[in-house]
Length: 146
Length: 146
DNA sequence: CATCTTATTGATACCAAGTATCAATAAGAT
DNA sequence: ATCTTATTGATACTTGGTATCAATAAGATG
Ligand SMILES: [Mn+2]
Ligand SMILES: [Mn+2]
Ligand SMILES: [Zn+2]
Ligand SMILES: [Zn+2]
Image (cartoon, rainbow over the protein chains, first blue to last red):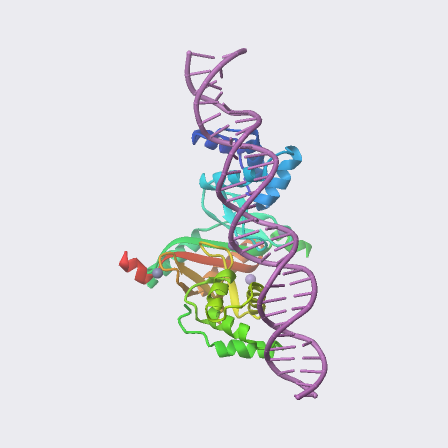
């Protein structure tokens, strides 16, 4: 779903670099999250994992999701259906668009939004430390089909 | 939390107008949601409700939340802690700021965001039908205290 | 390679949020 | 006052997610 496919070797390396062991369960889950076109819930990832590795445990998936999130490799998105789906984090912070027809996720440049927030900060006296913008609608492909 | 306090009579009226009966359970819950300074989960609202009306049922609260959401009187926000909290809907669509110090919610003009989105729509060929922006940080008061 | 340490795993039991059911209650129309 | 039926609350259930713990397997060491 990221325009440039994620290199899951980097993720394995990141695990190693942080003193984690690189196990088969983790390999499986890394590949699943790194290559999915769609935001995945832990539960969905579990289903996919068991196709190629049937005895994968449920807790293992949740633990791995937490680990990947802490390492900043995936991030949680609050989707238009379901509140705990995960997508790979792109190096540059971008904002997320999810197509409600085909379910695919796509990333948009978030500089304009950041500018907007910075302005708002200054005139309001607030300090804004985190912003979540998610856009929903129809991607260019699906818009044409309809 | 809305700068202008909500008039809960309007909510009662809206219920009546839509063919619903105005019961004591509903009165209680309407007052709770209309006057809270903070986004409330159903569970939290249930706790508050039972203080003044101890035998209020859990399902009743969830049913009422759904009703109020369908009527557009409250809307769900995906908070920085917890994914199903509810705030009164303001007549003009605005975007939400939540202070991570004091937990209070505040509303910001969302015209600038809408402009941004419209621009993005036109250059990308996407159609954006729903946008969720939530900002987190420190409100002007809490920023000073710190 | 064989051994050892310990992070990770999977099974199980558990918990909390949310939903389905259904007999009892109470709006509010007549 | 009576009657109809939307609403309620108790209960049971489901689902997403966590805690526990003995068994497993990375991978470091010799
Ligand atoms: Mn959410
Ligand atoms: Mn347009
Ligand atoms: Zn699409
Ligand atoms: Zn504050």
